[in-house]
Amino acid sequence: YFGPFYAIALYAFIKKKNWIRNYVIIWASMILVNLIVTVAEQLYGEFHTAYPGMMFVTYGAYIIFPILGLIRIFGGRKLWKEERNSNNKDGKINELNKVVENSFTAKQIFDEETYSVVFGQHSEWNVQQIRDELNIRWKSLSSSEKKKYSDKAEERNRNPEYQHKSESSKKRRKNN
Image (cartoon, rainbow, N blue to C red; front, top):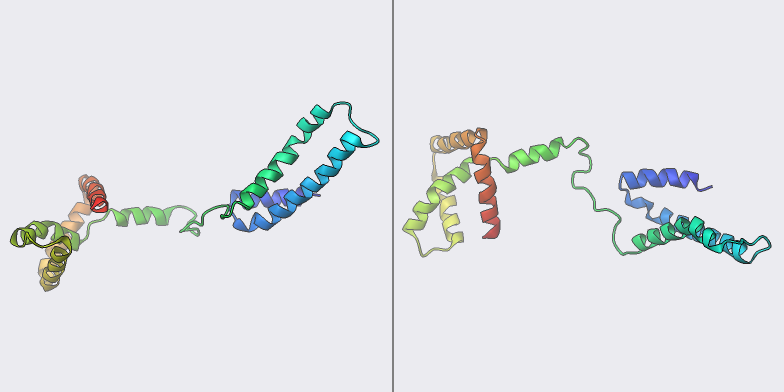
């Protein structure tokens, strides 16, 4: 009578569903209670076994797996972490995120080219002050000047040679 549970549990474990927790507790409890009765009958009952070691080897999985299931359930955490893009079955959204993550923007190109100029003019400023100045200068650019940086960003995004530089600059930014 555990057959339907095994089918549902197989589905839940393959799909990493946390709702299986309560059912695992019920299953493990029932298996262990049934096993206690079976082992007691095998050891002390009217039809006790002549080979108790073989009996424990045979029923070992019925002891080990319910106990492991209970330990996992009562471990104080979810069985699986929730996927951020759980509705993303074919990975297209993740691939798109990688492309966007590795893409240059016009503002990034502007900052890259202008940072050293601002730093040279105001070497006593901290990084936040320089960023604020870069934002002010960016906002004061005309649309034709911004278009120049957009074109450069598009060019870099088409050129795979710049993707490696993008990765290393991300690491530098993380470390700072």
